[in-house]
Amino acid sequence: MTKQPETIPVLEVENLSVQFRMYDRGLRQRDLEVISQLDVSIEAGEILAVAGSSGSGKSLLAHAILGLLPGNAGTSGRIKFCGQTLTPELQKKLRGQEMALVPQSVTYLDPLMRVGKQVRGEKGTEAQQQQAFARYGLGQEAGRKFPFQLSGGMARRVLVSTAVINDTKLIIADEPTPGLNPEIAEETLRNFRELADQGCGVMLITHDIDLAFKVADRIAVFYAGTTVEIAPAGDFVKGGDALRHPYSKALWNALPQNGFTPIPGTQPYAGSQLSGCRFAPRCSDRTAECTGDIPMRSVRGGKVRCVHAT
Ligand SMILES: Nc1ncnc2c1ncn2[C@@H]1O[C@H](COP(=O)(O)OP(=O)(O)OP(=O)(O)O)[C@@H](O)[C@H]1O
Ligand code: NI
Image (tube, rainbow, N blue to C red; front, side, top):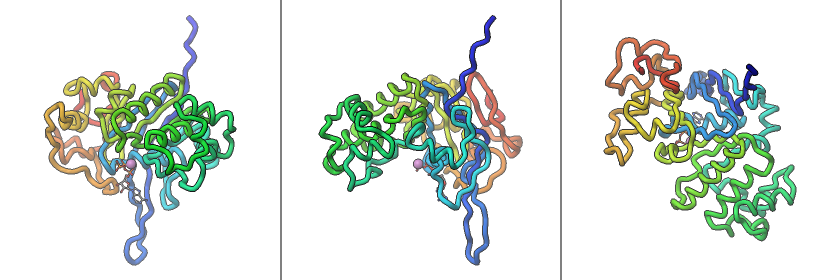
């Protein structure tokens, strides 16, 4: 029997931690760990949604991948792009080309530069830009406009065009839909699906797991700076016992269509050094074992960071 060629994931994040060097009064220095022991991967053709509440580390993960962390941040662990370990030099080379960020807000467009020029960037050609614009239903005249002359929907398509212009293999979209009317939000998601279907890996960062399971293949749930569950999107449609981590179940129960049941307590600040399960203080299933080191493990075709999950 011939062996199937192994496909190399577009993105592999292994045991990633991110710390910020902070100075207390009197210049005492301490490291604040905001992402810890994070593992995640994306295959070509796949949309991975990254869902989690505010402050759980979603944007920092995006910035760590792209090499956009601020100067006082340090990382450990490994990030591989198409099998190659990323270094700051490589990140700089690939950024905006083979890996691209669709930022949260159209205010990321330079207000003083015509959008065609922005979309082409340093290396894109006029022909590539026109092709991308045509693909997203933008007239050629759009390229000569300034951002303030675009409608919200057009500006969004411009941002997506920016991401596709250089045969991008990995697109990271950070909260691309809030503030958009539902039609444009859906159109934006359709664009990502299309790009994935053509072989791109897409990381879709969102607060909204409702939206995530409509378009994503898998969902990674973040809590206080790490992944607590990574599972097929279908499990998040079913909810309840299809899910593995108590926090994922709680998120599901908090959805309007599932009764809006709130989760008591609050997420610990990502920098607060906790040992053991970070969700334990809010978990009704917690036991003494939850204070130990909790690795990710495989359960029913997904991954979970919980000693009790079956
Ligand atoms: N420059 C920084 N210095 C210190 N701490 C920071 C810095 N940037 C972010 N943090 C902290 O890191 C944690 C994760 O932040 P991050 O922006 O990744 O959250 P997020 O999941 O993207 O949240 P949101 O959904 O609100 O965008 C937060 O607790 C935040 O306060
Ligand atoms: Ni964010």
